[in-house]
Amino acid sequence: MAGEASAEAARKSSQDTVPQDDSDQEPDFPVLGDDKAAAFFDLDNTVMQGAALFHFGRGLYKRKFFETRDLAKFAWQQAWFRLAGVEDPEHMQDARDSALSIVKGHRVSELMSIGEEIYDEYMAERIWPGTRALAQAHLDAGQKVWLVTAAPVEIATVIARRLGLTGALGTVAESVDGVYTGKLVGEPLHGPAKAEAVRALATAEGLDLSRCAAYSDSHNDIPMLSLVGHPYAINPDTKLRKHARAQDWRLRDYRTARKAAKVGLPAAAGVGAVAGGTAAAIALHRRRR
Image (cartoon, rainbow, N blue to C red; front, side, top):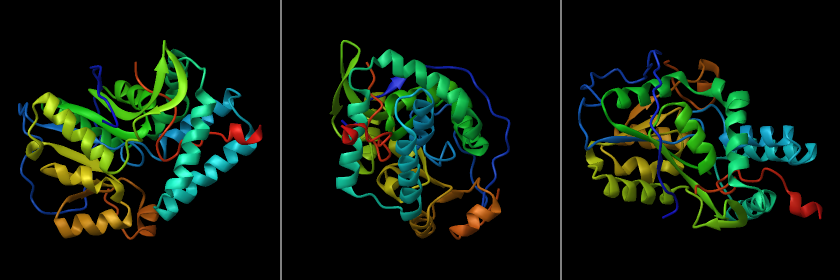
């Protein structure tokens, strides 16, 4: 499986009002006490504004992991990916290999500790209050909530813990005796791989997927969203918006009116490594050698 679950319970609440752009009367959801249900949340632009790996890259740059020109190129790649909405497999492989070379030889504990610091520096203020409230509603109903992301599982685990979620599924890189080897375990947790990971987790947890919910901003996550009985398009890209409308999925948009208008949306309101996923090019360290 491309990802693995890690669970660590914490208490955290959100009092934000959840805006919505669909006006139809909805039944009470999530269902209180339904222990066969759970929720699965994508991370980038669903739970957090922007890409977690970009923010993590900023933190690594601050700590002298790589140089200014690498950060600039990384930022451009992230902007291009978000605007184009497509991924080139060859480019992703090259980026992944470059990032793996950066963390090779570093200890897992070091990157986890750095991740905690970077969350406070760059990520905490970028959590969407509306999405956090949705996650909290599942927790309050007695259900488990996981992040499911192509980002490194360390980053996802830190964010899940800080938000009081159950745990995280993320891209995993190999470590031996607590040290990164520079190899990826399986494939990045992206697209269909997310759906496979969610299905496996549901089996292990004894969940009924028809009673579960999934949340994402990206059309790449349609396989995951299609698995569950309660799919939500959160801050959706154009392709996901069209698909969600056609399938009568629920929509939520927490962006400003100006940002939403740009994509034609009404505004309503041992774990793995720092490698893998769509934005793993934190630096092109090897190319400088």
